[in-house]
Every structure is written in structure tokens, then in C-alpha cells.
Length: 164
Image 1 (tube, rainbow, N blue to C red):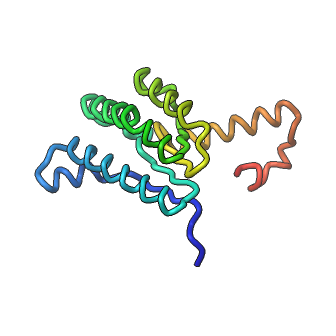
Image 2 (tube, helix red, strand yellow):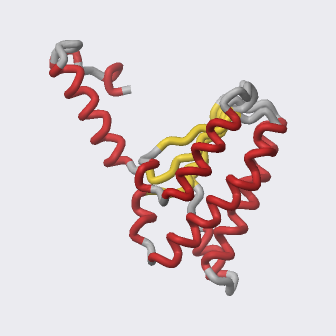
């Protein structure tokens, strides 16, 4: 069986894990970030081409404000600290999701990390931030509607290929 080229991980359950073990939910998120770092490094060492971490969904915005703020601070500090390691390990950083919804300080470090790693040619690390299935469907439908309106495709040409 050939090795996979792309692995995607939904980072879920860190808060529940922490509570089950008698800790504050945030402890679980910090531990999850540490585990994510190990996974990133091991994936790059093994020659994986793409690793996607689904880190913060649109539903996560519904959590208590304090928890959301702590998660944003954690994301900020990890990206700030690990950007140099990504370059050192030749890992290209990419981001998907609604970045405009992120606080300015987080968006800024995301953009810095994107710029810092744009020349890297090893593994591509994709962070999904402020992502959601409904949001993605909405974006896809709007994009297709623009193509139809511009006369680039007809409604009859919309098929599985166009949707992917």
C-alpha cells in the first residue's frame, strides 16, 4: 500500500479530554497544540506532502468569549514561536477559512507566517481556521453564480467537476 500524500486531522476533544482528567479546558488546548507540533515534525520527517489541521471551526466562535480569546492567544503565540522552525524544516504554511473573522493580531501573525514560509518546498502545512461546511458551500455557490453570470459556464455545465 503506498504512503498517503495528504493527511487531514480534525483537532477536536482537547477541552473534553482536559475536563475528564480534572484540568481546565484550556490545558487541553495547550496539550493539543504540543501534540500538533509533534505531528507536524513527524509528518515532515516522513516525507508527507500535505498535512491539514482543522484547528478552529466557525462553530468554535459560539464558545464562551474567554475561551475563544484564550484560543486566539494560543494560536498567536504558537505561530509566532514556530514560524522560524517551519522555515528551518522547509515547511510551507498555508491557511484556509474566513481569515477576516480572526482578530487583527492573529491575522497579522498568520500573514507573517505565510510570507516567511512561501519559499519553502517541503511539506505544506494547511491550517483551517474559522472554517465551516456551510460557509464553504456558500462560497462555492457564489463562485459558480459569478461564472454563470459572466457567461463563462452555463447552468447545464455545472457538474461534479465544477463543484470540486
